[in-house]
Length: 195
Image (cartoon, rainbow, N blue to C red; front, top):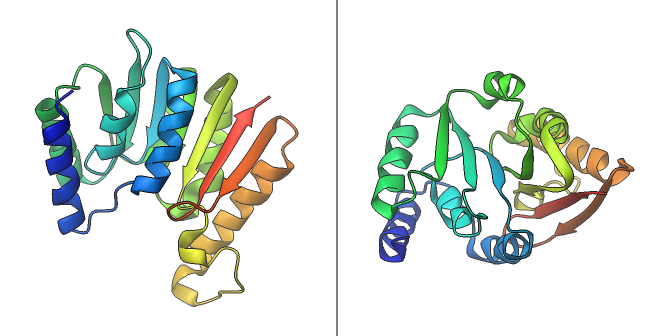
């Protein structure tokens, strides 16, 4: 993997205000993946491919990441980035809306990383649980959403996202098949292990 290219891609994304995974969140996930050595990872929300490229380092032998993105410019950029970093054979990009694509997938995954439309998190969870291997892990980024989720925040613009994120948290903490930890790193990270 070309780490230098990866750093350039990260810098470029930050300069263009493209939302990419925060360093402290990535540190936590790196530790989880290092221990898990997943064979298959599903990522919901690729953006320019930065997180998938970072995760690809921890794949087991012959492992693969499936990622989904609907923004055409970002799809194009992500594909170019995979080539630049030299991981295009480890990452498969589904082009389109995750809401339409997920129900068509029937693979089993060791890790599912959710980082797409906040208002769709409960739906993404339902799909992730369907495809998660035993002892698999679901990671959801931005779960505290700028602190709004845990406050009594209620501005109209963000209300739907906040409501759905709260619903997501309720579901993962009350599901008897999951062991969930919520960390205040980055914009909040929920780690749910299937037990």
